[in-house]
Length: 76
Image 1 (cartoon, helix red, strand yellow):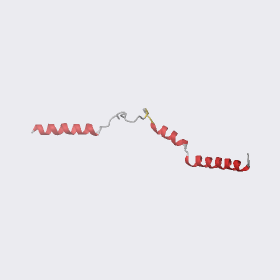
Image 2 (spheres, rainbow, N blue to C red):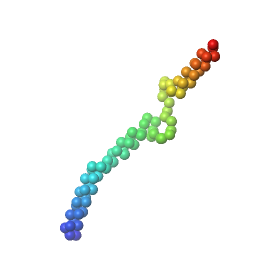
Image 3 (cartoon, one colour):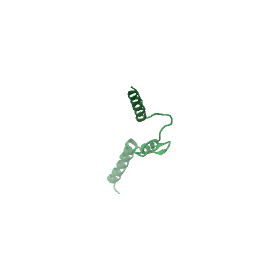
């Protein structure tokens, strides 16, 4: 192996190592996996979350308000 090939290999190795340390962040994938892991297991897109205890959803609030309005209007 001549000296020019050796210099090219060393330079290429140094540039690759620098680029990996600068832009490649394998911990980002692990961080995203940990964020996806919630109390009920992995989050699956499109799956409804578990209902929270003691909270009224906006839909339920509208239904209750509509029922009260119907009762008030029918009473007169």
